[in-house]
Image 1 (tube, rainbow, N blue to C red):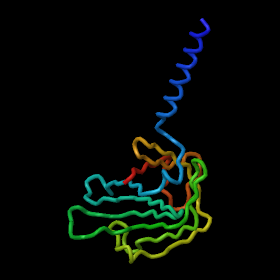
Image 2 (image 1 turned 30 degrees about the horizontal axis):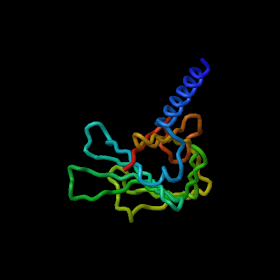
Image 3 (image 1 turned 180 degrees about the vertical axis):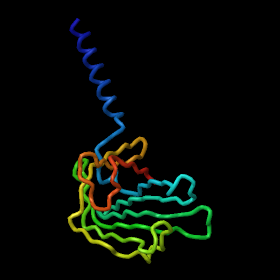
Image 4 (image 1 turned 30 degrees about the vertical axis):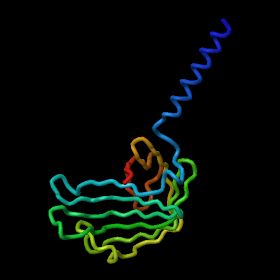
Length: 166
């Protein structure tokens, strides 16, 4: 009888360990954050213009955030930029800090974008901001969770926004 209890206990612990190992959402690490994360959407319902928002986290703890404008109906026009941030990042658990931010804008017209070299420096922010991030390693999803935090300067001010590994 005693052996039977030990076998059931061992079986229960094994099943629990397997379920924990299969967990989709994990706490992000620097290693899991490195790389390019994208989100694409159209400007308007029937518009051919596509905005691709992209984060690139580098090994040296720097990042770039850019919004790239493209129009598939005009294939001869290369990608154009409406917005670019660059700075440093720090990860502490699920809290991502972005700081020493330099923000560049297309001052001509954000709807059409401009070549990268024509973006104009508009702001520097050494303090930056913090946001909670969730990583789903099975789906290669990185979610920025702004729930319960004040909307930071120039952020995509919604509750959550998900980017996908490129």
